[in-house]
Length: 248
View 1 (tube, rainbow, N blue to C red):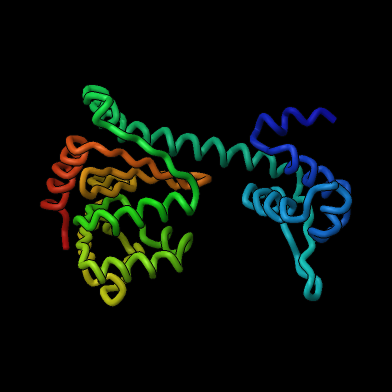
View 2 (view 1 turned 30 degrees about the horizontal axis):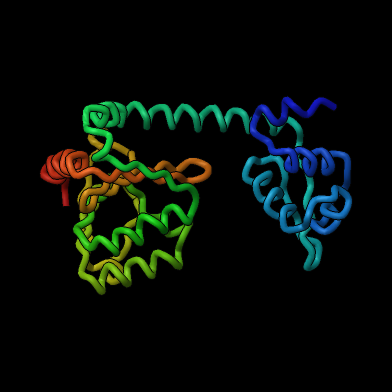
């Protein structure tokens, strides 16, 4: 079988090997999959998780053992549709921040440092940097539940340090039912204000000191940190305008 097409839609070589193996097999444990495919078991678990995230593999428990099985090949089409929607969503986000990004091209390059961090560790890196800088943090376009779900233990440590150093946070988020907010007990120095959906820019942005961090909740989550005093001032000015028209 020509597997290059599966690679082109985003599956890795080991994901393809496991998926095709499961299509031809009954339900299998991770041990059996590793043994029959010659893939190291630690890698098997990692690839199975990725395949489940893509909707191509599912699992069932039989007693205390977990068994994996391939879902219908028609799920590949759904996977492609999901990727298409994800690309469209990212395109919308880029359109929203494009004017600001283009404005950066007029700033001397030696004055600007841009770093990109991926995954949970990337989130932890810039949140630790907030504690290190110890300046007020201006946050917009956020639903706190994503952080609570992805790095719950670290968020407790983050707010412990926010309280310790009395770092103030101001957050602008969406005015709608069931938006997750950290409680005053956990984050007493955090103040929330709300905008209506038509006024709201969903791009998740952090501004502190001379830094701007833009978070994209794709797969994996990606944080783009821009270090430039003038850019930070521009974002701060825009934030303050929104803060004035937002509601408590």
